[in-house]
Image 1 (tube, rainbow, N blue to C red):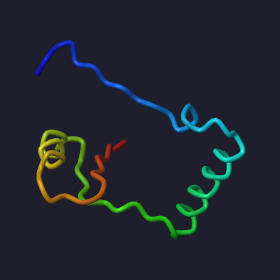
Image 2: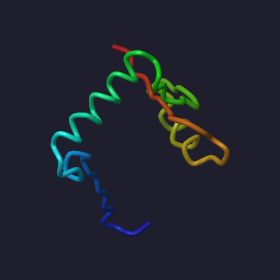
Image 3: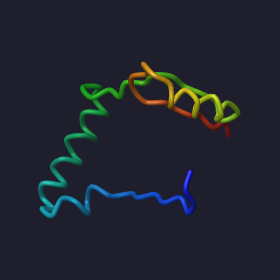
Length: 73
């Protein structure tokens, strides 16, 4: 690994210049998540205590979907 380690992030709002299109897209996604027509595919869920295992799983071949890490309150 080369240091310093760099990371980049972006926001959809910075990429979409048309505010109305952004609002329509956001409303579409939120409605789909609410009514169940859009369902994220979850590959596996880990507890925060298993964070090392979750990271290993992320690098494994053959996984499909999101990896969820839960935090107990």
